[in-house]
Length: 168
Image (cartoon, rainbow, N blue to C red):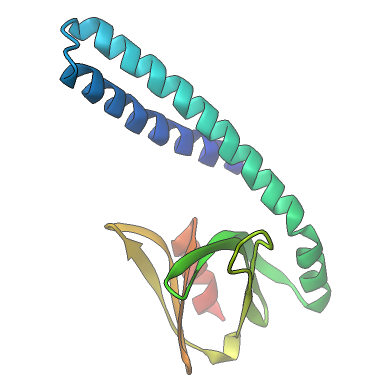
């Protein structure tokens, strides 16, 4: 149910943005009938939002399916506390994949279709500090500081991730 809500919210925000862009473009190009311009923008935003929300939902399901075998392997090694789709900032570039928090480690595995496909393992004993990551004024992930540096992960429900990592 949560994924449906997240997909719907993402679609709604995207649709609102597209609707505003459509309205601005039509208005600037001489859309003298304000009511017609507004209706067109709302309809365009609604359709774009619906399509984007459905795509995000489908993409999330495919990602979860693709990482099932990794999840099963990690479950054999110990309890998985959290897992979710995430981006790892690797050499300054966000790389999509899946982030797992187990009893022993934080483990990121990039989607194999990425150009910069990689994995990142951080032992929970090696974590010195965890903080929220902000981009463009929004909290959208966590920064994990270790003895050797820091790693940034963009993940939904960042505050939950922060809490669970700190619990260790």
